[in-house]
Length: 448
Image (cartoon, rainbow, N blue to C red; front, side, top):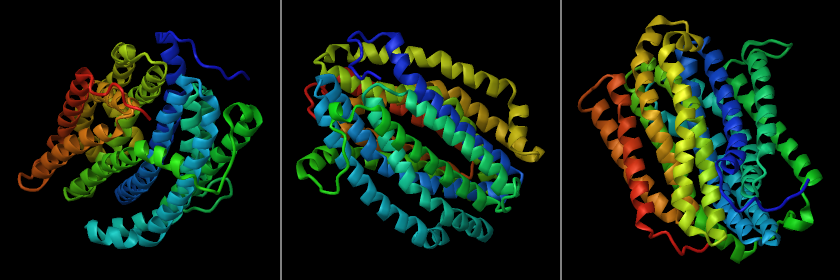
């Protein structure tokens, strides 16, 4: 396999080559999440709601840690654009060391202290019990998830993303098979319910880690990129990584915490509203798969262009990516709107939950083109290396989003459909602020 820089012309075809494996990986990941939700929906609204809260809590931890991966991806993309290939391995090794230490810290917090946290935040005792049991198993996955994210960042930065698709397909197959076996007790496996879903995810993530390790060391020219493993921290490399990654980690925390807080608000509307919101969120993430894939490509390609001293092409690149994403997003949300009843029945046989979910689903479908475009421009801001600015943007927009959601749930006691309307506020605010910053040209000249 030959590893060389991509063609200097950033065409729609080159954008697609980088984006589509990430999109395919997102498809598989969200199919797994949807399968989890469908299986757990058969166990009732308590299991469905508890898995939603426990899963969000876990992904907050992992998403924060993966800020290191995003930060190093931006730096490696810049080095790749500069043709400084030999610097990539040292940065990757230091990022790996950082992620291992962070993962140890997160595991302790998830395994030993999640019960104490949820006892203060969850109103339902039944939901609390199932959520903490879920996390007792799920917490072991943090080591595998962070390693997988780091290796994905490496392959995205060097524009070799097909391996991400292979890894995602493997993860999905293992996860779905083990979900079915461990949740319901098939294939000679124990019937574990919600805990089975958590254990299946951990085993699937571990399988992906093993695959990525073997693939990397058997196919990637280690000498060209100076790939190696180290337990010795190097202050300058860590400082450089954390300068870019720390704001991304904070931003990831705020983003996932925003979802988590939103779900805590919704939980006060009752178990049915929480269960419905989990279903709507699952479908929302599926609809946003193309946008998230193109957003990842935008961060990489923006940093790559700047590394090649081609800052003047950044806005043109982002326009191309937004235009490529729109038909893909529309192609996903139209069936969800037209066949909402049938799709929602895949998640739950309860007619009352299906009826409650329809309007929130219509709202997120119609908001999805705006949010996907916002993600692309927002990741473009991060790709410039100005991650502190992207953190400030996320902080302001998310604070407004949560404040309005709080007003709708508590003082005004609006219904679930009205509360989900705040997605429009978030999407349009993020889109407008990100676009304004990019048009200001204040990002030019940033070194990483």
